[in-house]
Length: 531
Image 1 (cartoon, rainbow, N blue to C red):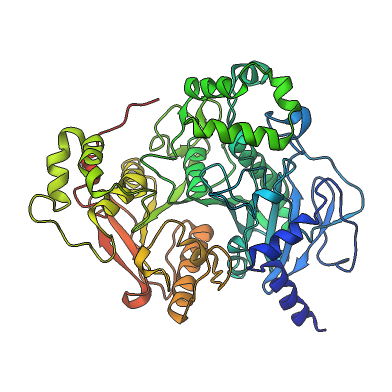
Image 2: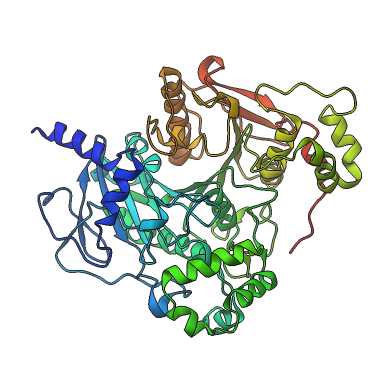
């Protein structure tokens, strides 16, 4: 077998789109043991601070899977800040992904939850063939899943395609649900920084610190790191922009469907601690740490049924008390931002009977003007082909679109360079859904597959759009500006023109600029009370 064919075969195995096959591989991973050198010996060994690693060839370079960036958060380390991983001797063959972080089933589906583990703080590094030259831009991906589910090793997040465009790609796992976001007064009391409940975000910061310390050995530039994520991952990026703990850890940020007006925002510490006390009941933290993983998940599932939500809390340590649209300067200086949403991605849309009440709650004294802006002041409007019904438009506005608009406006006001987009493309076979939540992610990574959770019968138009989006995203990582030769111009957002980029294969060139994404709607939303 030639090296080229071996790399192609390895990539097919590494990016296997079948979730079942990928999970079967993960089931065989012994996360607490170090794989010994095998047939992959000598393939681009890299010296990390914890020890030597060797990777697996891909079509565009190498991938290093399952690298520990923190010690396993198990036993007495449950609900504690992450600590450094233990070093190893010899060469760690980084050929298998680490397990997903412990989580319950997602709407009854157990493919991921059945193989999830507490020992899960691992990351993966994709490098292009020219990485030996060094100082390459780095893109660090944070997966979504409502802070409850997901994994950084989904085949959709395979970094081979993006790495082929001259960047290094890192994907991470981080603690989820009750394991990542349990706040409790006793946990805060034992903490060196006097807070609790943001362990998942602390994991993300630990992964970024690992990148700062180790990525140069892989050929990356620690001074040119772009943090990007989608949904809860995008909300994490938005939070870390303003975090007091993020100084110097990244230079640029991409927020995909994460600048939410509602649903993904941090909750007050007092509320989070009350929820933690309710979950623990008469059990001490020591007793809670002694519970089996399954017992903790069972208790948290019951708690969620009572309305408890495990999510980041405003602790003034990781999560700043300022609005997410404030503080758009890292302590070390300015950053560049890219933010966007999809045209029909409301997490929920009210029924026709519920719409009036929902509009009243969101717009308050501005509801009459909002109804007029939605076209509800006369005969019932026809559903818009791209945006959907009024209820769907409202659901998207209140979930993600208006959050992205507010963030863009705040950034422009602070003279922070920012580019805004709206993904409007209809995925083949899902045209009735429009451009729904998460539909843009396979295009960003260039992983258009006929199997897996993002499966569709993608055609030539889809692949062309994916190439365009990958170029925009990697250009932004390289230079802080998504534009480049041969690409439709993407104007920088300003409060004067409010320009954004529409992304869909229905347009000539697959993209064109437009103005004022929200029209008159978003300014009418009544500001929510600060936690």
